[in-house]
Image 1 (tube, rainbow, N blue to C red):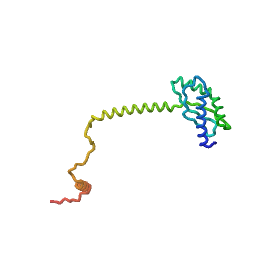
Image 2: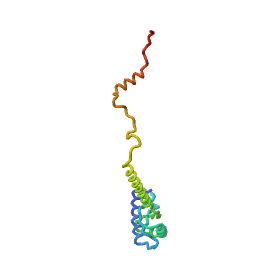
Image 3: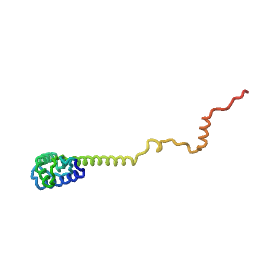
Image 4: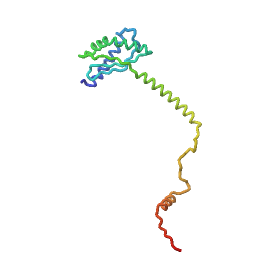
Length: 165
């Protein structure tokens, strides 16, 4: 097991090397506008996963995936030459769905903003169906002492005796 900091540094270096190699060395016409968004290396430094996005529709994304899969060997040898490590990790390319998810979340938030604006517009002229304050309040003209005395009188047992007349 390698140090996690070393794995992170190697992942950053691999992402830099592969992105530069894609830009300069890979001349595959199927390769679209590919952007590497992240790279992760396992703790044993044997496997590297590179996340990428492609600008374009589904066919461009599929073509770019095939182009990256066919260029994996060239990219791995380039990584080996430029890093100088004993064992070069295998490269795996994974399409990054984070931008799609972010776009869907932005659209959902926009729908919620419109719904909130509509609700605020409806609320401006709204009136209460009943009273504004539906909770019962004690009458203001009774004082609290009288109420407490009345409660005490009803709770006390009756001590009056009847006289025979």
